[in-house]
Length: 217
Ligand code: DX5
Ligand code: ZN
Image 1 (cartoon, rainbow, N blue to C red):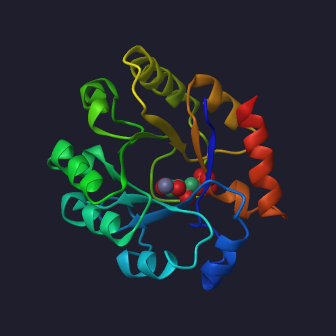
Image 2 (tube, rainbow, N blue to C red; image 1 turned 45 degrees about the vertical axis):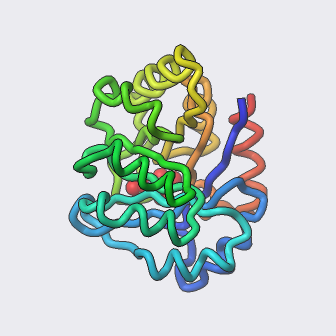
């Protein structure tokens, strides 16, 4: 099973996003957290910043939309050239239509679940998406503690994907570090977002390598 390491720039030095992205050239993707202060109680950046980063990033961009109006905005990120665009199931009025729209614009379609959202009602949508994001913290802020209570959800998602032999990646986001990544991988995650673990480390590139080695087991 392929392993993907996706650092989040949320807690990086945002006065130098270009330089911060350059540090993680050895990662698979860079994770960009878009927050609107409605879906989550925090505000970050939007399409213009993503458009500015796309030509200068050494790795493709993985966009995580924590916004209420996902149906309206997600396709524009795909059209701009993002590698993947993930919307929250709780925020999408028409998730199947939205996933199809994202794919039509040439990006991978991801669907995210907040910790309180069960995966079972969404298993039937797995054939429509490329990635399922199981949040392992309450979305909104970096630096929170990994929720071990999400491990059964990751296992259930992995079982459903394997059973149907679907090419769906299972991403985890929140509290992923050297201390927790093995548990997430063992439960069935294959795509790992890590914010403070990477950008809080002395050497971000070395941290990416260390996380990858642990996830590969
Ligand atoms: C939180 C964001 C995460 C955040 C993760 O809502 O979705 O991507 O950057 O940060 P850490 O890895 O520090 O938990
Ligand atoms: Zn995120």
